[in-house]
Image: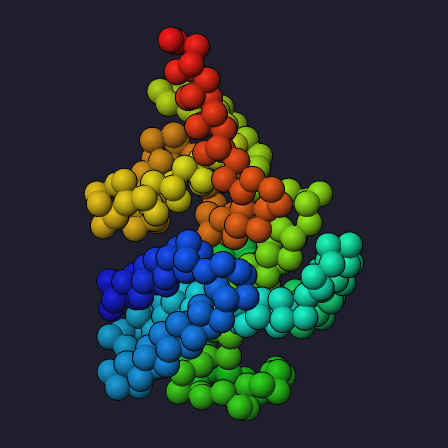
Length: 280
């Protein structure tokens, strides 16, 4: 089932990239992705209900990694639809509008998500309680659960898979709102520590390398597009002996930059053309 899960997640990545290129506004993109992800999740639910899981590990992977990735993005895009539907057209009013939504988001996050023991468990990447958190039928009602749990399909939710989805949605939505401010730059711009003994070192920023990776992937420049962006990212990490972290999170921040969004690629083009002109 692992290959099937990878195929589903890859199809979502490809859909996001295609929609990002073809849709003219954030709300159009969000509407499309809400419909696409809702359909994907419904089909996956039918498949799970029909065939179940091959093993305990398969069940854990599904509720820990796969479903939260899809549901988290669905929650995120739905939030984008809501916030953009009422966004002001006057630029002077835009910053206060999005600033207020960031405040509300952070307040909700601290109250409903970050204060729980599970949040610490997830953020520290622990796995010792995975069989409890990510298998069906293990919820202890005496520990207290959010009211929404009584409305979900308990044959397709462990309760904690939704918690993970909320965390993922928060990360994406915070990056989206932050990117609305021209004075705020994405946070993943720090340079790598240079290893003097390494044969190759990436000496520009992380975002620069991520821009390049996405450009190569979208242009189908690596293996005619047959290779997923995760594998391309891993290739560059191996070559330069670096860790890029969550490239999707970084990419979402770039998408909503003010001004020139693909700054590194723009700079590459400028530098190359300058060199060509000087070499004449």
